[in-house]
Length: 282
Image (cartoon, rainbow, N blue to C red; front, side, top):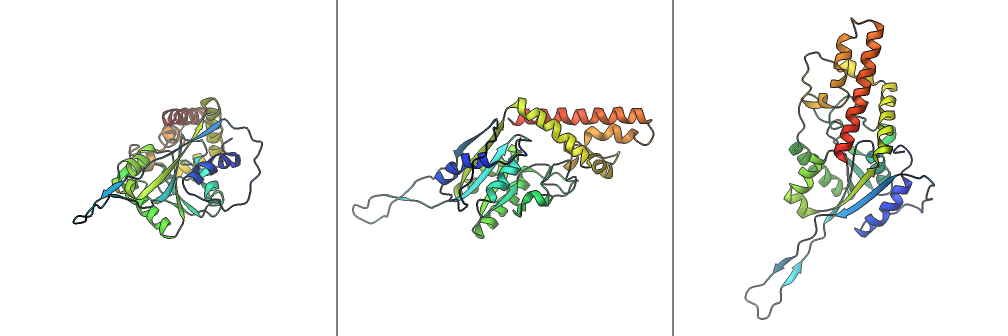
């Protein structure tokens, strides 16, 4: 169901966003009859702090509260396969907005199928930042993300557009939102958590892997295969790359039956590891 229209999610989030000062300019939408086992929990962080300012040398000057209006940032979070990218794009079609990717693997260049990057068609004309920009052989750290994401947020806001940060890498979000005092002081965040029950998510994840295989997953990994590669660095840490190692090593010498068995085992392992990741992220 995450591939279905997220119109029902937009209806649920409109109130939350408007409470933070966002305004919808789109026309009235029809609520679809899609039944989804999904909920959005909303919370605002980066509460404004009140600063008491006293003027010296004045008689009975009362302290007053100095307030500065903070720019708004939307953060879409959730486990892998829950539809974060789709929701962020749908939101960006309702606002003048741009999306900042916060997925650890999608930030790297290459392996678009393996990392499940959104296609140009799926982007629906919405500008995306930090998508396929990093050297695939070098680790893109949480600090790297914080620096690049902060610059992207400032750039988007200078053009009077709304930054929407979307992705499942909580360490990236934490580095930006929790660990960066300057970010906290400048921006007010609206967090949207997309949550799916495991009985629904696991079959979808399995089907998604099958669709990735049909789309050319094996060929994509084969083109970048290096028997001496380090699977602990860069994009080769992505689920789907290490699991294919045994199959690709044996592909040129093994008989057909062995190749089929090894490929099926690799695909099953990819599905299992993706489900484990989803469980850890929930």
